[in-house]
Length: 601
Image 1 (cartoon, rainbow, N blue to C red):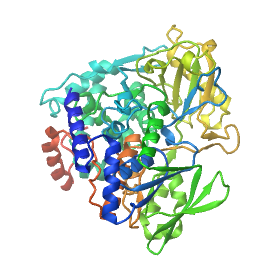
Image 2 (cartoon, rainbow, N blue to C red):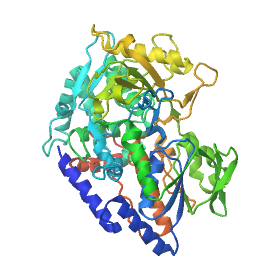
Image 3 (cartoon, one colour):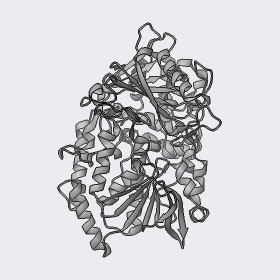
Image 4 (tube, rainbow, N blue to C red):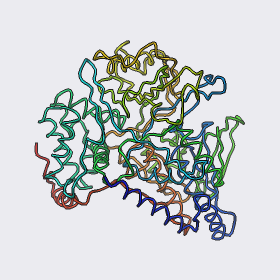
């Protein structure tokens, strides 16, 4: 499947990068050499960079900058690092020397087509000095599509979904058969509908970039795949199922270009092309234990400083540059200022755009487009269970749930953790982690959308929808008596009241979103943008997109600073060479105003 070759390429890239930077003993040696080089180049102790935001984008930028000799301070409004990727302690749950129960904004996974983030994970050492955070990734081997109403659930083992291809497997005459066979086996849709879908995918795969950006970016996924005239199962599995659960937006408005790119990335990953590993990987412990805490410790060793509980109120523009930032510190309770040579804004878009004043927006008019970017609720709920409940060795997509639920049973992936011995009061054996993606659809218990429910109603409704998809065929997978307790993302406040709020929303991708996404480099010479809303090749609000944007922001900063330090490598999504002749042909057709050659309906 090409994984060994891909890993060898990544390791070779890492060795080359270390050699270029003058360090051969790991990231600490690289950072030491980088700091010395920067000091020599600039005639001083190094240049100061203020990174605004301590999520994946901010911490990724901090690492790349610190490794190149810059002095970095990360300003984070929360009192913890990691942003939406972090896990968190459930207050008041620790007993008798055990750790608190682990909560989170929502589970996360690391598809094999991620390339930029895994490279960063490889460069974060674990305390044993012999392994990296990347070694904490474990494979999820299957996925379950849970159906309600007594319909059979669809269990999909990844290793049997797609066979290893020969050199011609991605050619247009072979790919539909390969994909149709996989979908027919996995989803059990009518053959005609499967064939229709595969040909719609083929249209996008053979489309040139000009058509993708000029045409498919403006077409909703629902219309592109002709969902309105297909069966309800087709609509649920290939329309709303893909967009709500993977991209957290509605199929009726989601950009075809974005949805199809994610679909084709999973396809190539399954075929072993351009990947870092298996299609679905998760961490082998709570996120902070497996990743965020080692990352923060590593960054501190590189000299990165953290100002926690420091909320950026304004990025102040004066004299053609950003002069300073105004902060409100939770500890001090009064505004204060901080300055640096360069500034990387790495906050989520809904928070970042509130810090851009009139003068800054006038200097960089593209910032105003970010006001049109949309975010939506995707909220995590954890149910702590008294018995181990490994529903499937991977994620469960509750296709028929009105609130677009996805879940994972976590204890099975944490081999070094014994829930009863390590967490809570000794009664909890598993954590069923849930993402709630649809907050404006009526539920099955109260007939209300989630956003109109109280917190208790949301919990009862989510549990009822889970049981509707798992207990509907006579087998009792979930039992009410088994629930020890639950936890909801604390970013959600005011449920049941007049003003429900969510401080940590997710960027969504309606048609035309791409045109409003800014690049990392701005017209202001010392101000750069990172975050999953920034224009990247990944093009999706993900940890991979955040990491890629940070690399692009750092490269833009290095260019602006005239630094000779090596640029960050930026991986783009795999593009099979077999399809390039068809895409060149489509470019000529697009320029002539003609449809894609396979776009026949």
